[in-house]
Structure formats: structure tokens, C-alpha cells
Image 1 (cartoon, rainbow, N blue to C red):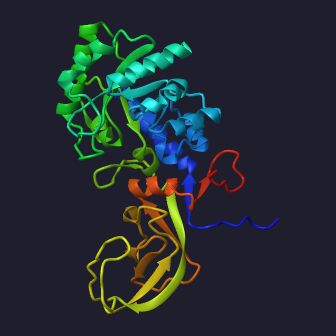
Image 2 (tube, rainbow, N blue to C red; image 1 turned 180 degrees about the horizontal axis):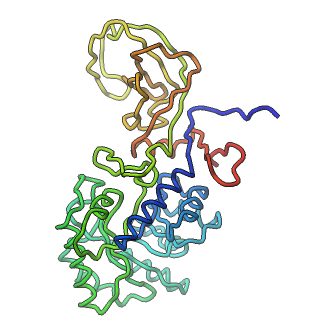
Length: 369
């Protein structure tokens, strides 16, 4: 048999490196009594990655989309699942059917979850999200006690804990002050209502360095982690985490044109197709190449080009680069590392082949369904 043809652009996904990353984080954070809940949303609930994470020791998986959680369940993934975006009222039936836990901020939503869970004769766990400065989802801290008073008696709802989200909107970092506030609030809730909260979720990948380095007392015992597992780094300038792989996922695309061209455009100039007007320095004649990859495929600003290759511009379907060494040649494959924005967009693109490597039992390239 001939070799299987590989199409481009393509993502190469090294399952063994992802497995290593999650095992390391689970092991290191367990020393701080903090569990890791891997977040699956960039992979759209793909069962290969779900199984990789579970085999590596994950006890629960999380996602922001009920459709992805449903996909995992229907693929035979039996591990508990957490919905990490406040449920839509239109999806409460699916939420209680497919999710063991959901993160919540609205009384009306929890009331609907209660009714749906009662109809199905099941209990649904909730984690109440607390606002600690990043101004995304969450109750103001001084509203949490009153909020719980209104929902604590709802049938088939189990208050599992509290949590927070940081860094995603305004880049507010976790620190001793906001994590202590969350811990103290957990104590107040337990004292006021006689509850035992088993989940105090202190954020996402941005909280890892705080968790690993903090030596004081804390109630935080869970992090919801995606970026650190898949990219080996934390937000805030893509800071690498020691001992983790940063190249578990790479994006490769093909050169379709290579020319020597002037660096300055000519003719009457207006805005481009995206309403932009780039500042273009005069570098004289340059070695320019076009790669078959564009904004429809990936968030181009999140691509990290190899040495000697500089991304200068992009359109829907074309990535324009310049080289400082030898010109690229037609058909040459160029491999990029990704930040979180590029990872999120490329994994969601139907135009990019996804190839899962170093997975037990995998003998052929496997394309995203």
C-alpha cells in the first residue's frame, strides 16, 4: 500500500506530550491539595483527548458547551463532567442530563435546573461563581450569602462549592488577597448554612503559578485548566511552566508562492478587506512567500513562526511572510507554534486537518469528524 496522503494545513497533536503535561500538573498540584479539572473546550469534546486525559489521571472533565459534553458522553466517556459556563435557560434539560456539575450565577437558572432535575429524579451539583475583579461572571462577594438563602431549599440541587474566574477578560491575576477572600467566603458559607463545600475552584491556568508557589493557608482545592495542559504555559505573555511541553500541538501549512517583491505597495491606497490600513516600512526588495493559511483558518496573531520567517500580513486565505535567509520554495511545509487564541480558532476550523499522534492503538492518521 502507498503512503496515506496528508492534506494541509494540519494540526499535529501529540497525545503523549499532552498526557505528560496533565500528569505533571496533577502530581505537582496534588502536593498543594489542589485537584485539576481539564477543560476540553478547545478540542470540542473530542473523545481521543478526553480518553488521553482520563488515562493520565483526570477524575473530571470540563467544557463550556453542552454540545461538547454531550459528544463525550455519547462517545462512552463516563467520567464526571462540569459545565463551566452559566447554563442557558434553553438548555437546562440537557445540562442536568449530561453534566454532573454546572457553574452558576443566576437564581432563575438554578430554579429551572431544579425543576429539570426533579423531573428526571436526579440531583444536580452547582458551583456558585464569585466576582473577584476580572468582571466576567460571578456574584459580588457580599451578595453570596443572600443568594444561597434563596436557593438552598431548592429540590434536587446540591451546592458543591464556590469558584472564581480570573485573567480572561481584564487579565486580573490571582494573588493572596483575592484567593484569601474566596477562602474566607467558603468558611462563612459553611458556618452560616451548616454546609460542607467540597469544591473551592480558584480559577484557570492563570492560577497555576500562584497555586504552586503559595505557602500560606488556603481553601482553594481545584483549578480548571486547559491552556497549561495543551500549550505548557500560563497566560500573561505565554510564560512556560517548568517541565511541560510547549509543542504538544503545532500547525503546519504549505507555501503556494515565493517571489522577490518590493516591500512597499503602489497605487492609490485605501483600507484593506478588513477595514485596516497597515503601516508599511520601506525595506526595499524582499523575499516574500505566501502560505495557504488565513484568517478563516486561524487567529493569525497567535501564530509563532520559525526562526528566519516573519509574518507580515494576512487575508482570509493567505498568510504573507518574509524570510531573512534562503527563499522558501513552492510546496515547502512551514510549522508554527500556537498561543491560546490560535489554538482555539484552529481546532474549531473545518478547513484544518487534525492528526492525533503517539496515541496507543493509533496506526493511521485520524481526521477530525
